[in-house]
Image (cartoon, rainbow, N blue to C red; front, side, top):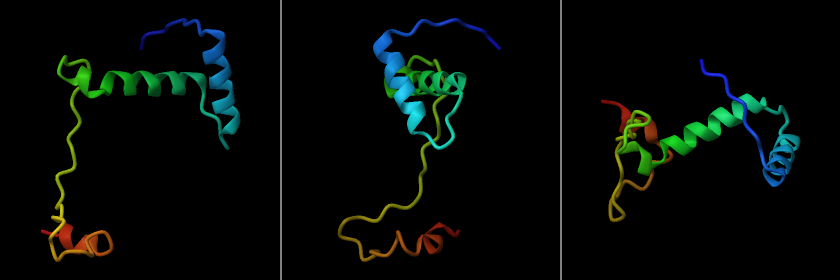
Length: 82
């Protein structure tokens, strides 16, 4: 695991403190920074460069707008069973 020291500008630090204050159980600064960095590197523009492995997209059934399957969000289990 890599250890790093970062410097936050005052405005970013204030936003971070406001975010943490709004949380019922505030995450650690390490958790917030790791999540932000993962999200940044996981954006589609970075996937093609190979910084993080691409996540598999859910390939479940999708009803067409003209489909008679209007209850797919309610009876989803029926559609996911093989």
